[in-house]
Length: 112
Image (cartoon, rainbow, N blue to C red; front, side, top):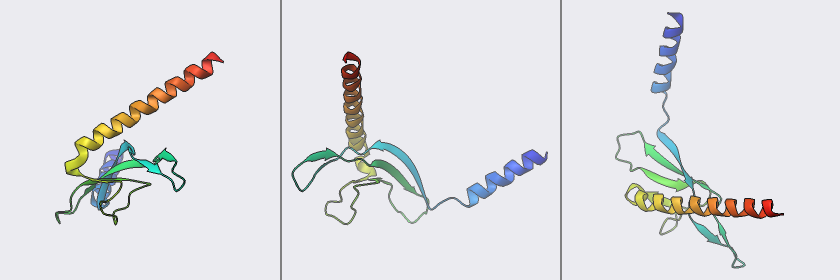
């Protein structure tokens, strides 16, 4: 009984003290960056989906942990919920490219 009451109390406190925004990891950022010297490289950030818990009408969005600049126009590294289908496709392509590169590197390493 004590274990159950302790678990229930912990569950209630966790529910009461929820953060104002729920965040879920989505995947690697699909964006590429061009440096000052003209070198293009992949963004090393992770895209997180954010779901505001308040009932103030704040929209859900996804943002890169590294390259997101919400003040730029258009906002770089920021995707609104209406754009999530496209974002999902871009992230899947990025993952496939990373898997291909990893497989190639393993094949090259095994051939040596």
